Length: 379
Image (cartoon, rainbow, N blue to C red):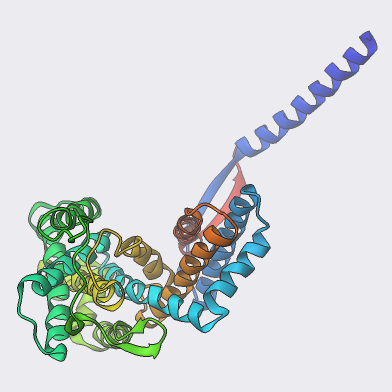
């Protein structure tokens, strides 16, 4: 018995010594970052795809911990989103607001501004358009739709104008102001939904909109004219950013404030314009939801489209055309996550977790895009 105890004690000492050596080795290492002079498009793409791959591996581990084969779950996501005309149409339906919010975040990022308020701007644009539907005259459909699109854009721009003024006049960080204003906008919508706009059955949603206020379907499932509007804006925004004088000023403001000032650009005016344009695009996401899909205003017209738009913009590196691709990519995850919840009894948070992991992976990959990371032995 004593001999066995001695062997066990000796084994534990060896294990402790082994881990102590590992600890000492890593303790002696230090990380050295060397600024890269330039990063090729190919290298940037490889790093981004690697980050997405790591996010999927971590998502697979999360799914496995819930007792489901991650490969089966991934196949279910693909089949659900792309395996039938219905699945494809629903994927496109979810991609429409993501294109709008992705563009909203991207235009701000081009000027190194963080608009985290696309969710609130979406709701405020939808609320303003709904107010016209409820209190305004019923116009012929083309005119009615035009007015609602304009009001949605104006509502989003007005809501984005608040953090713009706070940043320009009082130097307030736009991340904090835009984020907090999301809750204010949502609560304003709730005030009307639980108050004067409450439905006849006493539930918090408005009566169904008249036919004049509904976007036309384009003949493929529930896909509506909002998709055409989104794609037109993608083209227009690309032209604005890369082929106009205003776009040049916008990009210069984002790359170097000192250079922009030296070139005679009015920085405050440019910031204000960018905020308004960003908010207008987010407001259009709200109109596309209430007039294209829901046909009423309620609390759940958005399932976090404003926040997911941040991921879309980051993945696309703010390129409007690439935004369309990644909006569809993330809408596949959203559609697939819904099917996982129903068919495989996974938590509803699976889609949110996958999006969060992708965002963190992309943010982390920025380190490797800008620096060479080296481990060296310290003295």
